[in-house]
Amino acid sequence: MEHPRILKQVVLDTETTGINPKEGHRIIEIGCVELLNRRLTSNRFHVYLNPDREIDAGAIEVHGITNEYLRDKPRFKDVAADFMTFITGSELIIHNAPFDVGFINHELEMLETDTLTLESNCTVFDTLAFARKKHPGARNSLDALCKRYGIDNSHRELHGALLDAEILADVYLLMTGGQASLLDDGHNLDNENTVDIIRLPADRPPLKVIQCSAEELESHQQRLEKITKIGGKCLWNLE
View 1 (cartoon, rainbow, N blue to C red):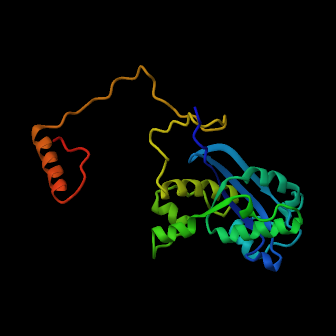
View 2: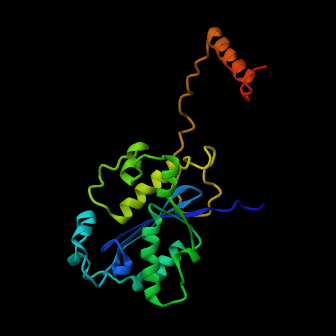
View 3: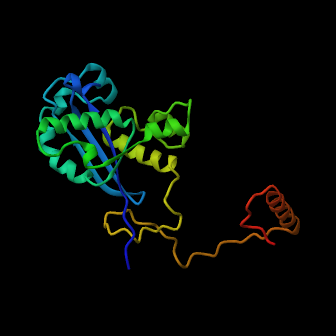
């Protein structure tokens, strides 16, 4: 029996020394979480990086990462192979993708290897572009989307790549329709790191079934008939 194709997605975020890699700014933090068939796994990729340059004061105000903290951290070249192994072949989920993709491609270009670009190894889904189409005229920052979709981000006092990636994973799943299927129990995933599903005990008390009254049933049937008359398709029509 042929197994269904496993969809691998990686939700990614970065923090940087500034806003423009063309001005010599570098990545100082990468955070990634993995989704398999739209289910969060325990696989993470998270590193802080020494950028070999000073961080802009404005950037420090955003993410709180200091030059002193990064002095003993690895360079991008030291983690590039592991990073590319983690993301290659996946669909990257990124909020404001041109920013992060531009920085990562700049880092890859500085390596002067055959890695080429991020897009040559992955596809990219920009949640900001998607949100702007889905909610035109509304604020679509990560904080605004958390508020719109009821996601608790009260612990997010400063930007952080891994924390923001975890939050964005929740936003993405809700914004694009939640789980792939309510009946999907993950048995098609050949990955031991997939989060286990908690099932109710078999000996639990039976659920109480409340039957509708005759009046409620009649009202329901009348509503279905009205939908049918205006051209609607009623899967629940009793006739």
